[in-house]
Image (cartoon, rainbow, N blue to C red):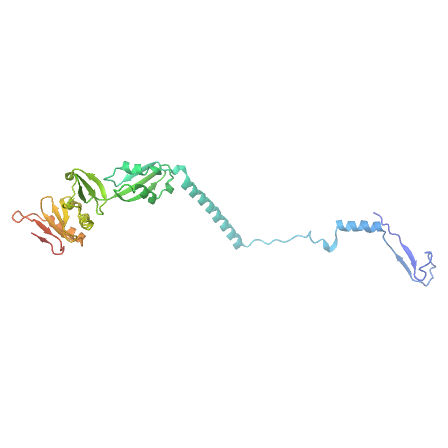
Amino acid sequence: MPSTRRPTYRGGSNASGTGSRPPSGGTGTDVISASKNAADIASGHSKNTQHPQGPADVGSGKVLSFPEPKGKRRRRILLSTIAIVAVLMAGIVAAAVYSPVLALRTVTVEGTKMLTPAQVQAALAPLQGKPLPQISEEEVAALLKPLVQVKGVSAKALPPATLQVHVTERIPVALVKQGKTFQLVDVDGVQLSTTADAASVSLPVIDGGSGTLPKDLFQAITAVLGALPADVLARLSNASAASADAVELKLDDGQTIVWGNAGEKELKARVLSALLKVPADPKNPVKVYDVSVPRHPVTR
């Protein structure tokens, strides 16, 4: 756009003149100047605002970027990988714990003699349909607690849908007469079952005499019976105790075993087992085996 500036002439000594050019030989100071009108100023200001120039235009320059250090990049990749693996593992564990694919459908039972597998399976029926990873041995033991024959239990998951249960039963060591029936009890005195025919069970009958056997005597007798080998226990007819230090056993052939107290019961059991294996002498039959002092047993 062409400039609208108009040159003016001012005389140095004739500032108040009419503006006519003085002769070239004048001695006054002559000044030639240029000026803008208001429209030019406004137009120029608008242009400068819209199109800044010079040093103010520094934002359009390029910024150099430096590469990320290898150690930092490696650490970032490692942390990202660990996070991804953790999420995947959490998903897998959650799927295994709650997946209906691992729901319990079959219970196998081992180790039962007094109980039947069906009784154990019936007690564990509340676990049916529950995912195997959510079933604990404590839960299995709690469900089997009402079965007094169970002394201990272990459980093993067999994916996809089977629980294997091994039962350790209490071992009956004696019969306790109660009226017309006999109770099978273990070494702790726990009643395991009852029978009306004592001869059907190869266990000694605990003789309480005319009354109820005191608890301390009962515990002394059952502790002795619990230490005996199964073959010796099967030969006993009854057991009695005048006191906790005077436990006495009777074999089914009428021989007597003087046991004494419940101390050193394992050693006494081994000594008695060895004595019973000695061939009988018809001329000098043994009527009494005294193992109350197991290191010096006596037969008579």
